[in-house]
Image 1 (cartoon, one colour):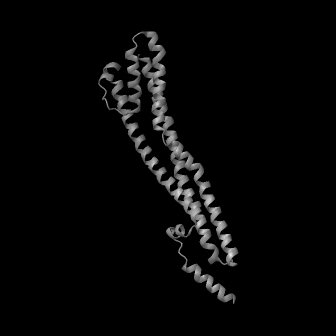
Image 2: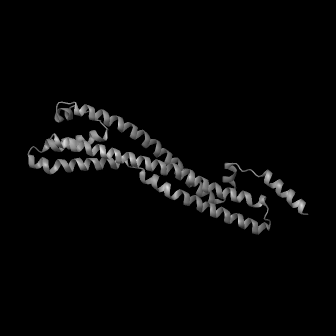
Image 3: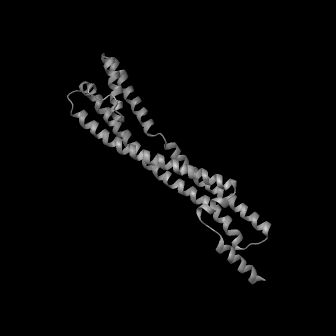
Length: 224
């Protein structure tokens, strides 16, 4: 009798399909929902990561070119008048907004009271644009493991229910449910780890770029 049960369990275990698609299809609606949420978070996270990687590479190059041209120009006003209308570099936009305010106010008192505020406001505006999407990365990095853990707990509960119904504790009965449950945890980690790494990197890059804008603003103020 025991030999027959063992043979049956081995047969079930060997015939069970543990591919990712099979694990997803065998899961119940709650675990499937968790898996789909984590996949969506992971896909969107990678979209944000790729977009921010390209953005920082672009603005670092364009800002370096802008600074070189600016400090080699004859005057700030002449350089401002020659700026392209569709320029997108954050430092150039900060300079452009400040110059527009500067040219409208010719008295020294108005310049002193407004130009510093315009530069600070411009920097905050550009950094806000650059930082768009960071909150999502931070949220995924902090919550995805717990979402996956919820799916795991739910899947294990289903496995225990299967054991209770079948009154069979063989590995062939327990293994599929546990595999489905652990699949949710794996997806949670797969979504969270890149998001955390990317958030830390891009946040550090943003801090460095903010310092670059602030240094430019201070040097710009000295020539006004």
